[in-house]
Length: 109
Length: 114
Image 1 (spheres, rainbow over the protein chains, first blue to last red):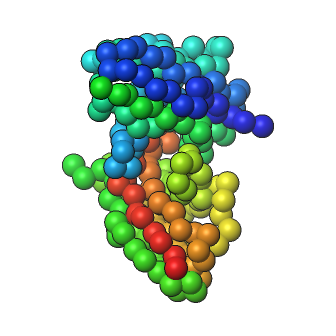
Image 2 (cartoon, chains in turn green, brown):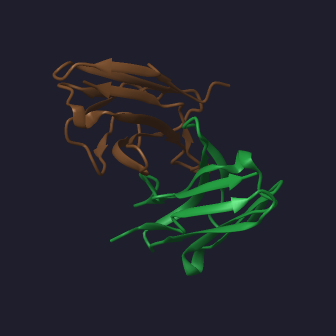
């Protein structure tokens, strides 16, 4: 079955809007991470967040490990936030890193 | 601090040719991974290596071989390239013993098989 599931698959925002991206993960997955893949294809680490809440500027993330979900919040979105956001977690210990299908975000001016 | 370095960045192969994608990390990580990303899709795990001397198949291993040459280096080999292997390939590494297992990625190799 699906081990890491992201929603929504696509999101279109006006500059300045806020958004919440969700990642659900199965019991066998842990050590959640969030990545941003920019339009040039680079994968940029946003958060390593196995549990709790972290903030970095306009971005913050919360993982509730007991309920098997993580949320990524983007506030006051900018056009440079466009791209694909992936969550990923380790499955079967530290051996496999499994990705969700991603949320494709487009921020328009 | 270079992190994860992949070579080459771009490659065009003819069907049936072979090549090796190189990956090296300088973070002293135990685990290393190879992924492929097809247009508009997520990352699919090809092979991973939990430690020096061990390798295991991921989700899409067919048509590929890997070598964990030492702790730093993890190479991916295409013995007989096929057009279906046209993709962007990413290498990653993470800690797996004691430290936080945060994964870091290389810049990717864009491979076209004609």
